[in-house]
Image (cartoon, rainbow, N blue to C red; front, side):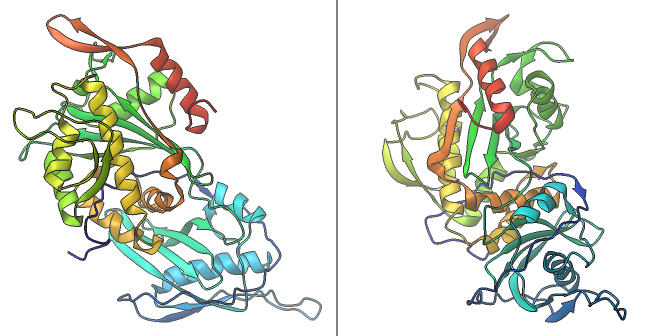
Length: 413
């Protein structure tokens, strides 16, 4: 497999989200083009030059100004970009179909335009359609997806201002299945449960871990949170978080032990700084504190360890959050144009309810986040019993944390 990042690197793409699409006519004054040109990126596509249709002229009406776009990308993608740029240049041109939030964003933070622009980028075919990241020689970046109805622009990072990669906060559940190789990884217990939030325009977010043994009420009776997915699938986990804690969760990503390790192995090793030592376990060696590099197998072992450590399941959930932050740092070693390929690799080892538009927005969001501005927390609870079972009973503070998170994806804001 092509190596996406330098050696000693790893990836567990933990992603985020999208909004409904509507057309919103608006335009902004044209800005002067940048003086530099983005380096071309090789693709297997045919070079195509695309323009939008020019508005008809009359004896008293000057023709609308259009933008010509050329580059080695699919013809339909070039046409979608030309439509957006021509609309930005002159609002008499055809208004593109855009997510409502993106149309509003471009009305206040417009893209740069000129008579002719050159673009480069990359595409990937994934389940549900195609995705793309496009760099324009003006310095702007666009995200696009084709979900069966043709290419549409679904995100933008204008050179003039902050990016728009979906309505904020973005929020997704990341679930690690307890299934072993050969078992149904979407229909067994959940071994790890996390809620990830992100605000790409501000570069911040939160990782919230749910203790897997949290004792919860469900339509199927009271049970451990880990057991809710068994026989029912991951969507019921999302439904529980939405209905009980009013979180705007947009979807899930699920992988199992083998999928996690294979994903890490396909990329490389994980540099990480461990805040605490872990004693030797029954089936694998312990871990020293401090900076080190973990193999894919050792990363999985670290993520699974909960025996003979202070805090047990709660500490393990916090350690899993540390792995996610280490992965984020590794992902940021890539260029944003690598995002379509990274999503494709991710989907080889996971299952998700997210759409192609969601996935490319989330992959691009990786490049906006500051790991130092992402809080890693675990919902507090106390150890207890439910019959013969050992459980974690979430405290009222857990409800307060989730209530605080719902509006902006942040704690204490």
